[in-house]
Image (cartoon, rainbow, N blue to C red; front, side, top):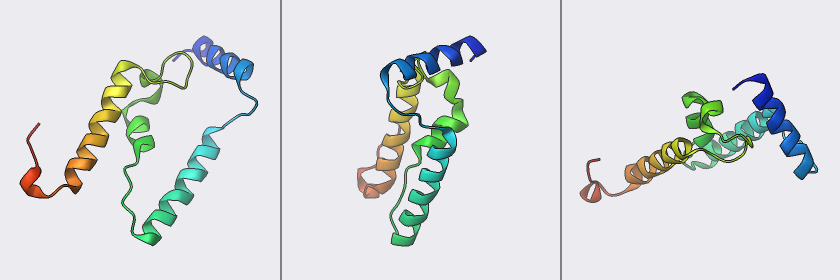
Length: 95
């Protein structure tokens, strides 16, 4: 993502939204949610980590909010894998 793309995303956001969400806020929120989930024994499918590890900027459309087709496919595969991992092994199918 180039500088102009980042500025375009920022401009688009400010024209439509009355708030800013900074990456540090997302990180703090996710860390708190993961800690609570661990404490309660709730399994987490961390899609934020999937996106960050796979290159967020290449997976987002120019608006910086919605995912490209490749991003949506990646997220769908991650969700499906997490669900398959929770199913009874008798119902697993190879992909």
